[in-house]
Image (tube, rainbow, N blue to C red; front, side):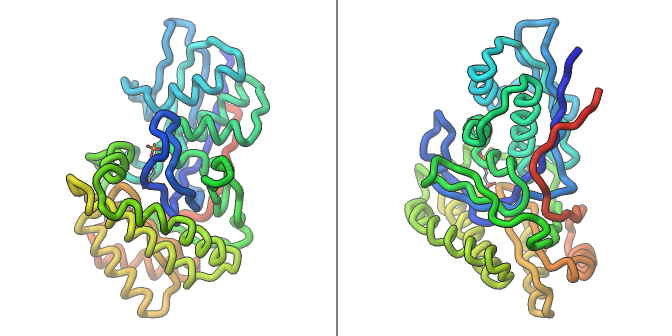
Length: 321
Ligand code: DP6
């Protein structure tokens, strides 16, 4: 049986997407900037389902009943490939799924990459972006390595701002909990869009944050990137908190981790953080400081594990049977 496997990496947003412009098309209401990470990955294998007329999705060996994130990209791609095949899709993550670690982004980007190779359809980048976006608004950013801009004002075009070798920072992912989140990003961002009194301020400031982050990344200016990343992150968490009902993804472990980051900074280390829809804290730092940061966070907080990553590359097809 012919099967195709591809690998993609998660990405963490420095300027974040929280809120949709169009629910049916799953279009973000704003531009975003992210960093693709190595070490963590989704590996997805696809092959034709010869035993039943349905798509089947397995994540880490568990068959999924909810196919809502995979069917829209699949439909989009099958129009291009002109295939009516039903597929078996088997995706493995080497990190906790659905806990604010962008597993859907890497999962979908690896699926789209495997599909393109399996049907030999040579997609345009805009088709890859569209297919990924239908699955998850943050997934198109995992189509590229390094620092990535997804520009809402240019049909969500994704472009690389810098690659790993341009600015080889480290990323330390502090796992505060491995439990799946209670409110999905999808539900959470709809609640915020409808109820947060500061949602429009959040929309209005997006382009300013994008511009500041672009300057900081192009100049490789750690202080400027720290400033805009943390400001953007804290504002997103304020939008969540002021929603009705309030949404809180940070935990006590998250808070203690941030306090230690501030102490480390005061001691002269170059680092900053970002936090998504989960309690995990992602630290971006000068590799010279990684060891000291890991020791301090391990000693002073209840973080379960710290994953040490670098900046990752784009998805790739792997030969495997
Ligand atoms: C907080 O891309 O997971 O990580 O489009 O509904 O699948 P859906 O949401 P998703 O949301 C990501 C939210 C975020 C910020 C970001 O990655 O930009």
